Structure formats: structure tokens, C-alpha cells
Image (cartoon, rainbow over all chains, first blue to last red; front, side):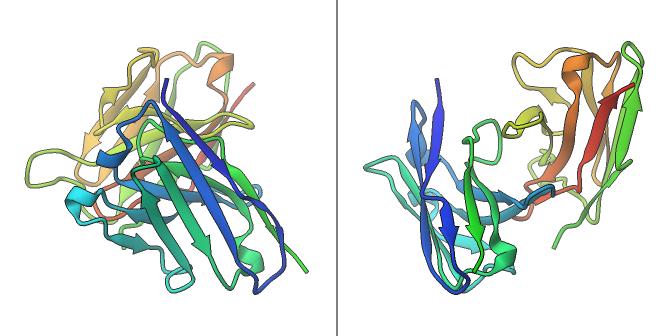
Length: 115
Length: 111
């Protein structure tokens, strides 16, 4: 069974940094374009960023609110996806999901940004 | 950026009755290869989103056949022929033609 398991969430102060991880198993991870999607408390789903597979260049795209502050990366040798979040703002708070954008989603990890 | 506009915001449905959700895209989601990169998800309370329908009308394996998707280019519809208690949650449409964009969600409740 395919599993995506996020970790690394927690309580962080505005302006600080946090790195989220997503471990993939039973999944052809290296071929997948992977995404981070977030959900603020009581709100809808918001796409954060994406990384293409290495065969498609391994390049990244970001949503405007996080461009320049967040970085998506991957380590295909470890089946891991990462989200480096810098200069965090209160509006970045929420549950962060890793997903292939289709049928595979993690359970999410909660990020709380508060002074 | 492609904007996805979903209606209604919420639905209260009697079990056994049909339900319909609409989603409109600000531009065509039809690719040159003939595929339309449009999806429907259901997020049940306390859970991650789960894919129901991919590429407009294809049900994911295991999704009950009371769920059906239709539409083309910019206008799409999800229909539930007979709503059951387990169908409650928030339904989202999503496009993957240009990055990813989600609709605002439709909350389905049981009367």
C-alpha cells in the first residue's frame, strides 16, 4: 500500500524557519511530480509548490504567496520530499500535505506560526 | 493563473436524494493530447483529501458508481445519484493543466 508520511511540523515564531519532510513508500517516487498543498484552519486547499521528476528536469514551481521563501526538494535515493520554509508568517499556518496531486496524499503535518 | 469557481458553497441533502456540484475554470483545461486535467476530491472530516474522479469523468477504482463526473473545457459537474451518510464532507475540484488550483469547496451535509 502506498504511503506518504509527513513530519516536521510544530509551533514556530514569525520570521523563523522550518523544514517539513515527506517519506514515500510502496510508490514509484522517482517518477512522480510531487506537490505540497496546505490547508489553513477551517479553510480550503491551497497549492504551495511542486517539484518535477528528475527525468523532467527536477525543476520547481511555487505559489505566489510563498515564492522566494519556500523551497521544495527531493531525495529520490531515500524516497523523500522536503519543504524548506523560511521567513514564516502567521498566514503560513495550517496543515501541510504532500501529494502527487492525484490519488496519493499524506495525512498532513500541522504548522503553527505564532509569537 | 487558472481560477476554479465552485458552486454551491454548501448542500444539505436528504439521504437517497441526488446532489450536484458545479465547477467552472477560468480557461480551458483541454490539453493538445485530448486529455482534460480536471479532478474531483472529497475531504471527509478529519481526513486527507481523497481522489474520486480524474480527467473529468473517470472514477478511481473503489469509488461507488453513484458518483459521476461530466463536463468539458471550462464547465464541470459532479453528481451523486443517491447521497449516503458516508458522503458527507467537503468536495473540491482541482485543475492540473497549469500548476494546481483548487475550487473553494462545497460542504455536503445530510438533512
